[in-house]
Length: 119
Image 1 (cartoon, rainbow, N blue to C red):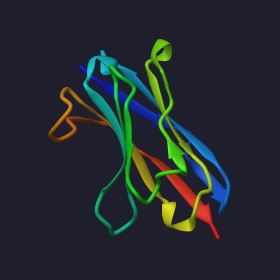
Image 2 (image 1 turned 60 degrees about the vertical axis):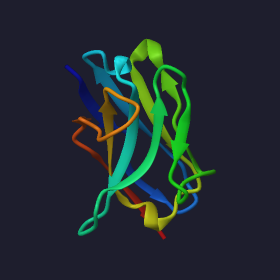
Image 3 (image 1 turned 90 degrees about the vertical axis):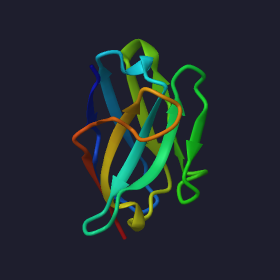
Image 4 (image 1 turned 180 degrees about the vertical axis):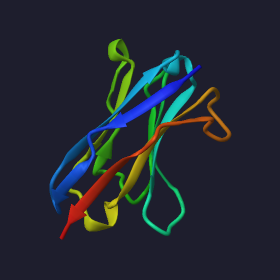
């Protein structure tokens, strides 16, 4: 089975950068895709980015496109969320997720890591 552990959250100033890690075990990279989501207090979870594991194809929410990327290290079974030019509205708990298919809902979720962007 798949286990996901996020790390790398913290406090940064607006315009700064932060790199989140999602360490996967249990054949996470055998999953069809892995994604990043975020949720601010009192708000619904929001899709941020995803990567198709077999091909490396990535996709991003329009709100983060051009600022965020999803690098991966297959040898370490780790995907990252590289966040650049952070904005206060990026403040949220960020979670990674894995899906066994290229479509449908994500089945496995990490515990989340807090990202706070000060203005």
